Length: 429
Image 1 (cartoon, rainbow, N blue to C red):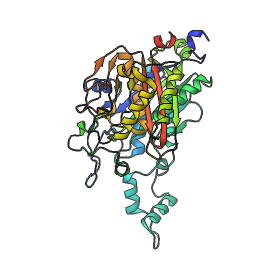
Image 2: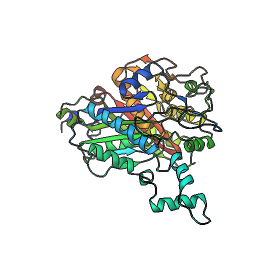
Image 3: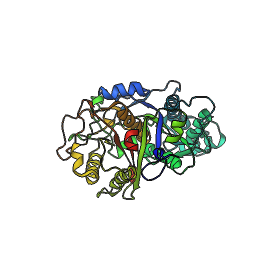
């Protein structure tokens, strides 16, 4: 392998040769990029189910093209298939002969969602003197409700994707909360660096806009309650931010060694130059006050990439009071005074927080930023927080020369993963 195919640490350079995305802005890179750069919002009032009595009644939903009634499993699988199919077409690997590498896919925790729970409650097998739970348990044991297992098997989405796309080996399902999408990409990169494969299919998907999801996050006081104007509710880094907006989406990338990409004549969309991760055990939802885990993940990605600065930060930027503050102070700790001239914007201001999918969705957006030289804005930035002095690319996109991007993903449970993407020119210079 020639030196031009190795990074500064002597490892194979890992190229991105295909990518796909689905969000509340639409299906596919073109519609998403047009929406992002024009400052459009995909956040709207929920119509999928009654919202009476809920504190939050808005979300960034993706409506199913096929499945009725709503099923989180079906929709998450559907949009993951769309994102992966788009990535394979761009990579020139949609041959129908199977993908010559492993699948790393981040998916939500397995669970019954509200329609199935309701059906079980109403129609579950009778149990003498039994509670509703006993009736549901009996129904599960008798197999009365066909297809129930796929909702409870964590690997069910991965298995479905492997069946469709013919990936090699046992597919890897993972969930590291809102860092999951970035973790999936990191696992693919590391497999290539170790020489275990020449290419990998990495992605993440989430379709968790249902009553239980809203109630859970509301109980944590994590969601915005600005229901009157949905498109204005997500306002990262603003003084009047009050919580994130839950959303659905999927993102996928084809990663392969640069040597493999060039050997088959594939266009290189960018290089995954660095990966960093660090976790803490401080709290189920809150970050450790000293920011050590977030700082460690950012610093780890920068060190792994061999860079001291980047041209742009695709922020985690959830619009919660604590997370945005922690992200600012952690970026300041790692980037120092260079942060003053580094633009930092949040796509979540427009698409909402896609939870498990966020790291993969925002990886695609980071790569589109590299390719097009346009910084997506942070919309709804009308009341700047003086404690977070950042160039958030306020409200309007901006042209810029971008050769390196840091993409941050921070999750509940202290799980944090960061990725550095670069142009090929930056990687081999």
